[in-house]
Length: 137
Image (cartoon, rainbow, N blue to C red):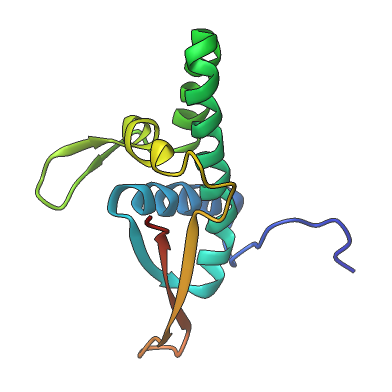
């Protein structure tokens, strides 16, 4: 029985699973969309939405109490890969992008920041593939 067991193991060790989730969420915030398997997308989707909500709360409370905004940024930095090299070779600070670009875009939205489209089956092993993307206004 799997009573009260949260998350998916994805057939990986705990460290590998943690690194995979961190890298997928970081890539989602960097590029706006990622193509991955359905199981990985479902495992990452909740974590991405929680980070966007954290960033939204950090923006609101950061105006009233700057210490809370700093705390929210530090929490987000601990859960993301800090620097990412973009497609054109420039380094992107993901935490800054999350707080400056992504969170204000969803300020009026109460949730549901991501969307999954089924793409089809992967050619090699017929794994169901999806496109996980951030919802645009």
